[in-house]
Length: 328
Image (cartoon, rainbow, N blue to C red; front, side, top):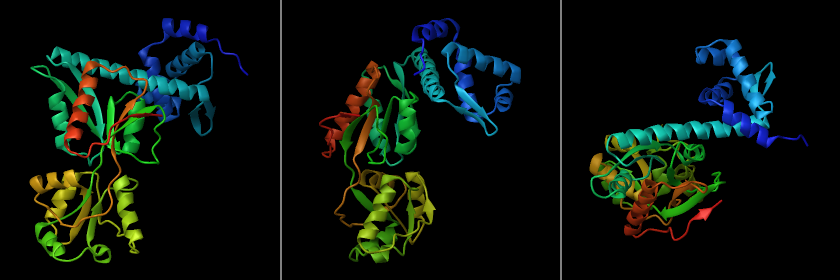
């Protein structure tokens, strides 16, 4: 086993480490070439080579392996990269907090949400977070759960709200179930009236123009599974999109397009896009909506209040399931 002088490394890092070193690590990981890094950072290759040598001296370890195919992080380099991402994201969060306070707000939150979380839920939770005249500034990052959880680990997000899935890597995270969503079939008003006059027929529905989220979103996988369990070949979507608003607009203007969405999102689209909900009753529910957070996070007051507001709103729906949180 190779010895590692942790005390010596701490001493060097405290005295010599600069923000530009952290940015350099991420640039090398991104480009895999010191020449391309130098071009990206508008500096010379000798300067980049010298800065990397400084870093490796500080850490007392080789951080990247060099080969004809480029530079790849060593095991210790991967650790340094993870911390560099976290530290730079923390600095971004600090700047946004300072900006919020300078504008008379209390704090800034970065919240990740999957596309099929109802906007009304998030907007109301934000509005209920702080009493009186103090308010938050908030950035909403919309992506799949698979994309949001790495951002949460890297401190780019304070929370992520998304569907639970057995395929998710939830190591180091707290997962708090909030509520379950029921599926609804949506179509244009004319098509919904025609479909609602007939019994549910999956073989007939397979002939429609489906608009769904891309794989591997949990909703897409569940729609595929329900067709297979009915003995019907799942339809190939004519359009794949994460945007519920786009799905609603396309369905409202088509006489043959359908989609399955969570009930609360479908109800929003009835109001804003003019679609209709086909009155079918499904005997299955969607994956639970979960509030993800880091189990090592020190919560700011604004974060605690946002989480409490979100829980209270979900409890009012009658579908709240978050009686306990799970740490992994």
